[in-house]
Image 1 (cartoon, protein in one colour):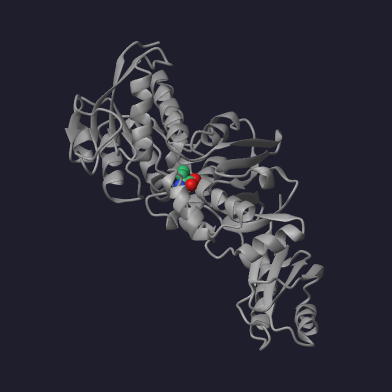
Image 2 (tube, helix red, strand yellow; image 1 turned 90 degrees about the vertical axis):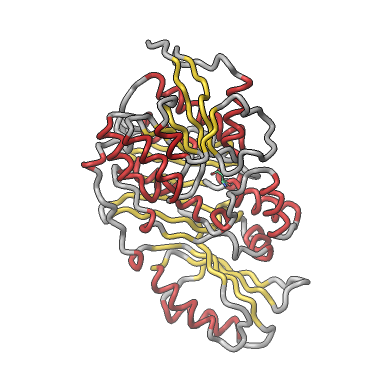
Length: 429
Ligand code: HSE
């Protein structure tokens, strides 16, 4: 094994970049693959910003592309973030210069993964992104390497620490959404733009990457159906719990003969299920293989330390000089996603209405559902002190999404229904 010194250029000194430089300064002999690692240059938006580590001895680059191309850099680490702009330009420059790249950038890989994989494979260098999914918990290696001898059927889990933290704190502390989000930002879980988290886009980037690795497809972010937690109300969290469920932001990817379905939705999970038990900023994931059956992994999915640990693990992998295709199969052979026809997929649902407390309302709701062929599984009407009207909650048996959507639209138009109906899936896990 080589004992060469790997000179690393780090672009981006935000939460993860700071975590990596802190880690490398605390572990000066970090040499898991027999070589040596030294940071030779850095790039960030501001050179003068106060930092908990010393960058005065490192070459400074205003332009991350120049850092990627520098003769003093053997391995380029991209921690800038964002699907386009400087992050993409710098990664492309490094790959074109024949340098291995390690990145934590899920948006970049989910949106441009196939073209970057083609560049990496043409140059014969690795492009690694363990930190892009579940932070320090090794989901990418699990799917790309450990599962390579199996055929993955489905993947589903919790992939956004910020949303999980928000839902947990809302439930446990009865706290307001905005208050908990501000705390997640302080703790370094949330993205620079938290709408990426609460809108479900961060989880969507991650499940898009896992789906590509699992199903040998080019990542196709546009094919992912996305709904975030920003519309989840405390009332729904409480009502779901009364019915024996916990609301979680579930990201899932399923393969069937009809194609691939990739989604992110707030979903109801039975209280005793391991995904319902994963609280706070934890991430958790089930991977189901044809031969292996179900595997469950759980761990830190956000924060400086855990994410930097994943970047360091990728640096160690580069040092071994092992090569495998970026997405399990050479970029030129990746299949296109074949999305399943959503109107034909079946779903069990939670429907919550806020209605005027007057005769005939429940009859009208159940009549509309019956006419549409939607079968009610359970029903709950429970006056709540701080609610404007009376909440009615019901769960359905499996029904076509299209049929359910039409029935809910009709119910929403009823004069006694005083707020847009709230519809959530019951997770199929
Ligand atoms: N904002 C992300 C999360 C960080 O909350 O999970 C890791 O991608």
